[in-house]
Image (cartoon, rainbow, N blue to C red; front, side, top):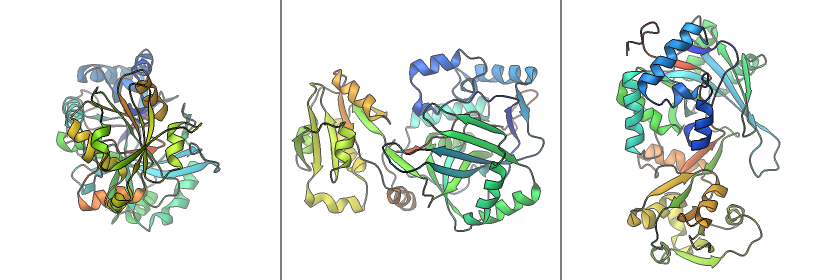
Length: 380
């Protein structure tokens, strides 16, 4: 099922960039000022601009092709936010998965986002960031020592601004590639992060999805929530009273920390700078066996409001926006991995942007180009 791909890398120092969800407009502007930044291929101004960048970089030798199709061993070393635990290290494989493979999503997508990716790929078939997939496969332990051996001497190391150390190295050895293929041949694939890129690739008919595979049972799997900023002057509280009990927030800690110490609670900040905790009434607790709190908030409150919603992984940012009078902030609790698997298996996806898997991969470690590298004519 998984395959090594003909990949490209930076010749020297990778100019990798964060994923789209972690970028602000100011950060995007700064990155685009660097003509060698991977953002010119991962989030281009247009397909034509990406094509021109690609040819310019090949002409200047900025990028080099791998000598053989490759897997990549890839690790992310980090400290969990708000935790006293020692550092964690997530180890996985960058590989190709057939675009029509039975990959199981757990979230709904925003159609316009997926369509934009599809149109880009149809005109310039390049993938600059792998989609993070979780693999339910006991045989993973059989290849973990191999991956660790490769990562003893990584080809590249990069420390991102969020404190994560990224390291990656190619695996060209055919015997080792066969070992990896066999170990993961029968595993189920669940999307952790990258639903829109997966949908765009699938709709574009590019043959392979650039993927980052890690085990579903990984202890280094950290799932944070996406918080919501609802841009409306209409109060959502009346529609919530049936389901939640409200209390003014009086804690001397950030609202995100306060709800972490409560059972089944959401933090709310109004445009008038009032702060609440909304605690799910006990008679509804049984519903959490079916779906997380974010799902029920969407069903009961946000969908009926039909107001514009912005999704932010940083609780401080969404709180600041509400305090500036830009809308209602909803600070959500973390999401358990069981909801991800349950939604994927049942085919009942969670609302868009329910989960934020940390740390994110970065764009520009490798590039998978499904076209003619000399002329830019797609062979997909």
